[in-house]
Length: 118
Image (tube, rainbow, N blue to C red; front, side, top):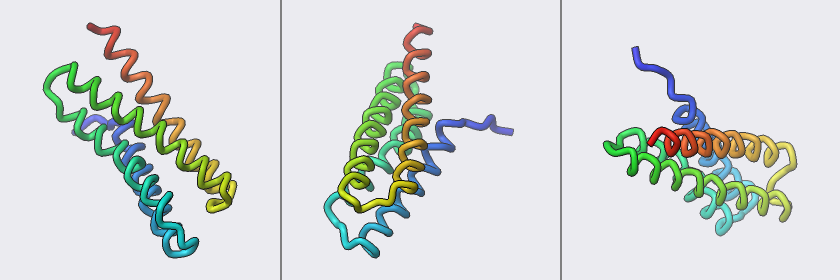
């Protein structure tokens, strides 16, 4: 039985939420520019974590996790912008920001721990 990978699971669920957010923004708010930005970076987080899991070297692993961290930072920015421009309700944005911050903490810890183990 495979061990559960928390950051992999959380980033996948976050990506699903981002896809649903994108659909909501284009269908209900007629917002196409910001929604495309948040879709690209928000789904990139999980994709880079998946790539990191498959990497052979520790250097490649850290690089992909760091890219996922940076994409999570960017996603955090776009969610705040959508909230502050009144495209997103406060409760939805806060829930998304909480999930994003959790991924930031996890990826940051992974980077720190992996670098220390060199």
